[in-house]
Length: 139
Image (tube, rainbow, N blue to C red):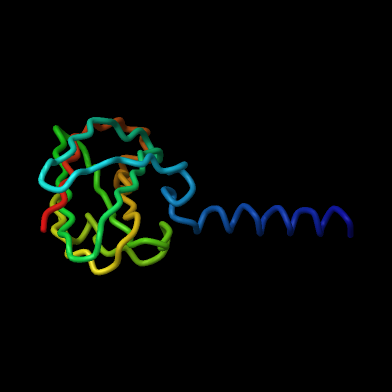
């Protein structure tokens, strides 16, 4: 009976891990990026498998947050989250729907999170994709 309960517990834990989005736990701690109004910041990096970078950008209400992604090949995407919203919750911009350019009106001051990731098929293969991310704030 004891072994059966261990197996059930282990199966439940493994099953739970399979349902979670692969990038939800692979992002790690976000890197704070300083972006001055009218002076875009350009970041270069890579996404490997399920692991991609995550950035925090502080924006004030009334500004426009512009994020654009350039990639040479591969299926790298990005999501943008409002202050206080974590990956796995509703993104205010989803790259799989909106494409490679986000043009967002900032309604709430705070730190906006930008997560980069690959489509699941590429991530599963462990593909590596290089990217250039341009982040700008305007009035």
